[in-house]
Amino acid sequence: MGQTLVIQPVSRIEGHAKITIQLDDAGNVADTMVNVIELRGFERFCVGKPVEEMPRITTRICGVCPWSHHLASAKAADAVFGVQLPPAGEKLRRLCNSIAYMEEHILHFYILAGPDFILGPDAEYPVRNVIGILDAVPDVGRQVVKVRHMCAKMLELIAGKAIHPAAAVPGGFSRPLSEDERQSLLPMAEEALELAKFTISFAKENIFPKYMDVVKTVGTITSGFLGTVTDDGALDLYDGKLRMMYADGSYEEFPYDQYTDYIGEHVEPWTYLKFPYAKKRGPFELEDNAPSLYRVNSLARINVADYIPTPLAQKELEEFRTSFGRPAQLTLLYHWARLIELLHNAELALQLLNDPEITSSDIRASVTPRAARGVGVVEAPRGTLIHDYTTDEDGLLTHVNLLVATCQNNSAINLSVKQAAKTLIKDGNYDQGTLNTIEMAIRAYDPCLSCSTHRMDGTLPVKVDILSPNGEVIDTLTN
Image (cartoon, helix red, strand yellow):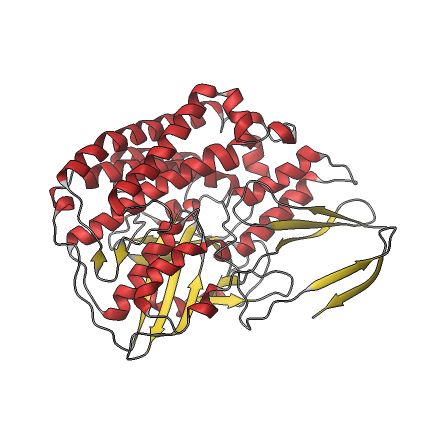
């Protein structure tokens, strides 16, 4: 008889999920599913709200990446009002975005994914965590905690608070940056850059070579990629046009308010996450190398961009492409790409702080309510994030759609987990290290499930199992 394995909860990710693995009679993997078992539904209860409240409301979707939702929402509101930001207002937004990126990528590499590499995927569960890292490399661990805390302090200094910010407002930014504040931020940004430089060197020398066999075999799939670039093809994490690159390296570009012409959304009954797909390349297929399959996040961004506009990160990108080509497809290379982005954002934060215009007091344009549609897009640490708002003549929301990064990686996550499970489980043989390595295929995407779950019909399915005193299921109730 076949056997069902359930990994629940998936550890060291943001949100709640489980992996269901169905084995056949021979003990080999027949099928897998990544079940996302939470629902938020922000789109529903935002309807009727004034659009200018959205940049404040949507930060509550997630305390891990509130700045991404904050900025995407503010940009969508800008578009609804039809307003052009003053340069200093945009630069302050970009500065906060870069600092938030550093905080997020440090968190993921060292604390969420790091235990798998620094301690090893077979390490015992009680030590395979951030405490184990602090024991294994205490000097590095202390510096990581210090710089990540420092990034939060930088955001607090610029915007008033690091989590659930309210500083980006329709038309710009809520307060200017003073010269004294800029001088306080500069040494902190320089220390963050030093950690970024150390991290990518440390990983290339001590981590990636050691696990390259795992990188080449676990969770590998072939797909297209989506990311944001400037008119000349440079990586841009705050603004630009969307570039959909297909598996053969060809691509097409489009303004982000036209995303519905290029991205479709499919629904399956066994998960709250939708399945976006590249609709220009055919119907939805949950298959490796399907023409409509695409991915977002760090690996996608460095694949679609022609270059990175900061010198240290560009040098790392050139080395990366020499080793893995373009587009690079190996799923665990997301970690390497994430460190290139960490370095880029550290460089960019220093560039912005050294820009004389960053302390200008002209930071906000006035706005007037109107009936309109506005789409705001930023590259969140976890991938392309789209906020789409429609308002009536009073500026009240009549329609809200959020197309979130993890949602766009949903197909790829499921396919990577299936590939990992089929590669690692043979003839019914597995152990806790095997199951953790399967989880690594999910952690590579750094999923954030809180903001990515919703259903088109707004219903909440419920299943209740009724057990006898000896634990047998005697009845199941569903709505």
